[in-house]
Structures are given as C-alpha cells and as structure tokens.
Image 1 (cartoon, rainbow, N blue to C red):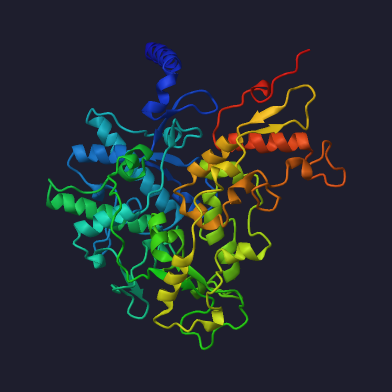
Image 2: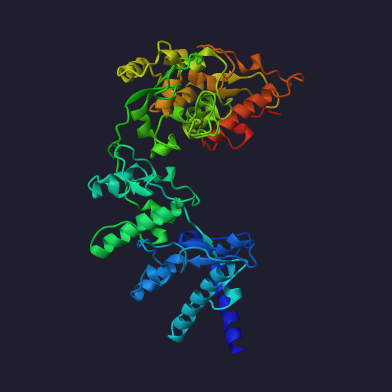
Length: 530
C-alpha cells in the first residue's frame, strides 16, 4: 500500500514538472499528443507485429526500443547474435531468434520464451529489466512515439563512400543472374539498390530494409571491429533515422559528378534504343535536355530515373507498355502529380516563396498555345523521325540549348510605372496607392538566379503575368477592371468581381510569399473621413 502511495506521489510530481516545463519539451524529443500528456519520441522504435502474417492480431503490437537493448547488450560485451541468428552462409537474419516464420504458435513461443526469459534473468541479477507480463508489453496506448525518418544515399554520402572504398563499386553494387542464381558485378550498369530491393521482400529479393541493415550496418560494424579507431557510419537506429542525427551528417559541398558514362546533353527521344524504325507518328520536335545541369539540381538520380537508369522511353513508350505500367511517354513527361515527370517537378519548384506569389493563383499545366510547347520543343530541333542515334546528336542538343536566351529581368525602369492608383472602388475607403515598380523589382530580384524561371519566362513581360494573368504580354497590359466587373458576372460564377479579384490577388500573393502585412484594411487604403 505504501509503495502505491509513493508511486502516486511521484506521479503527481512528474505531472506538475511536465506541465511547468512543457515549453521545452520539443527540445528533449517530447511531443504533446491529443491527451495533453507529453510523450517520448525515439527513432529506434520497432513495432513487433509479426503475428499479422497469421491473421488479425489478438493483442496490440509491441513497441520495442531497439537502441536501448543494443546499448545494454554492448555494456555486457554481447552483440547482435543474442537476438539474431545466422544462416549457413553467415548472413544474419533480421528476424528475432529465427531464420523464417514457421507457424503461429512457434513464432509466438519464440518471442515469449526468449524475451521474458532474458528479462527475468536480468532482474535476478539485480538489474532493471523489461516487462514480463502480457499487459506490460501489449499496450494499447504506448508512452513513446516513433520519430523514425527515412534516409537515402544522396550525392554527398555516395561520394564519401566511394572515396573511402577507393572507388571499388563492386563492394556495394551487384546484379542477379537468374540462371546461375548468383550475384555478380556489372561494371557500368550500377544503379540504386532500390531498383531491385523494394519495400517488401519479393521472391528471392530481400526488402530494402533487410538489404540496408544486412549490408550497410554490417559493414559499419565489421569495420569498427577490425579497427576501433576507424571512423565509420552509424550502427544504431538513431544514427541513421533520427531527424536531429541526420542534420549532423557531414555534407560534402559540391561533390564531384558520379561516374557512369552518362551524357552531358541528350535528346529526349520517343523511340527506344535499337528500335527498327523511328516513330513517324510523333510530330513534336525532339527536346534537347541538359542532363549534367539536372544532375546538379537533384540529390539523387532517382529524382527522374525512378525505376532504372535507362532512358525514359525504355519503359514509357508512346502508346504505353507493361514495363511502364502503361503510363504513356507524354504523361510521364507532363503529369503534374508526379515529381518524376518534367512538368511535375517544375510545378513543385513553383511552390518556392519567390515563385508562389504568382504561380499559386495561376492555372497549372500546359497552356494551350504553341509558345508554351516550344519552350521545350524548340524550333530548329529535329523531329522524332529525324533522330537516328548518330554520334553528333549530343552536340546538336548542346547547340540548341546554348541558343536559348534566358530572361532574367523585365522592362526598363522608365517603362514600369512607379505607382498605380487603384480608385475604381472608392466608397468607404480612399484610393489605394500601390508601389508598383517596387513590387515588380522585388519579384525580379527574387528569381534573378533561378534558371528555371530564366528559361521559361520567355519575354521581359512574363513577370507581369503574375497579376495581369489573362492580358496579352505588353508594357501596358489591360487593367483588372477590363475583365472583372464591380459585381461578379452571373453568367461566369468562377470569375470573381473586381473587389474579390483585388483581394484574392494581392492578399493571396502576400500569403504565398510569406509577407506578414497587410494586417488590416487601412494598411492598404485609408478610411474616408466621416
């Protein structure tokens, strides 16, 4: 009874301290859930739900703190073999105390016998141990949340590994020979591990999670075992998957280009390499593509080459194919909801604050005019049928790209009105004096170093289209009132009236660009004297 009272008192103290120090909880990896009680966040949380393989769970899954267990084992000079077995090839299984799932009772018995036995033994040695009863493990509302965050091999990490391993690519990269059922190294065919190792184990290919732990973590551990002073990568979950730890991973500024005989410039083709005849039906001009520049824009080749490092048309054919999940080449290049498509990636870039003020309220996708298409399908480029795969094609693509004239500015200062007085709606408030030139110059300055904007803003007046969105490009575009009437048009409910147009455009731009003001009506237009 006294023990229960002490526990209750300490619970009260902890609750008060938690309430008083809640302001700093985020610093210590704690988060307030809906209940208002702060919970611990960890990156090493593993949800033990192996029984799902045999049907619905009878009890809640177990929340397991992996790093806490490995730290304790390390203090006792024990290693992963306490929990993980090795097969006849010496490969460690990521499953607990088994190589394969046998049957439901066997898997359950494996966990219960081994986990509880270890905890009981630890307690008999006078040390703090884990739970030994069902309700202590299978908890409906765990007191800890997972902060696990995925990690990938970006250009910086790849370069560091390549440099450390003396460019011995075969130590990590391999292909599978289905006939001999063996792994082999194919020089010049290296690709990301994720091309073969998917989220789940398939046939004889282990999942990406298994591959990473068995290869990456094992390599780190073996290197450390051979040389205690060696600088190696993480061996605990948090070292890779904790958001704060990821911020501490050393970054190589401007790592050298990956070496894989990739082209500097290339034409985006519509006919797969080796095809008997070019696709005569495709009449659009071929697109010259600066491959080297796009490598610099992205941290990984998978940004575009999401399934393999081959050409897009190898999977995404003009008419669609099974290899490309019947996504046609046109869709693969223009699909807005895919960041792997050209147009989808560019649209994501438009969400940047410097661009979003204009682009957030503009229609997404291709404009239905020839100029929009010619931004990529340049005049002077060969047609699909004219591309023969000759050695001079990359040079021609480079020449076409070089001929493009980037637009990084707008009209001359004297052609931009310094102020614009908005007085069409003067009633309760005075007219608005808008610092027009200052706004235009701020927009131009924000995108001055943006290559995407420079090459797709085809005219000095393109930046004006952010506000004058339906007017022809001109030094003197039409006023808003040319389209938006004072009341909204009953025949066009999607077109706001003039009052709505001004507020949506101006306030929407401020919001998207992160501009704090205006806070109230009178910051833009003064109230009329009563």
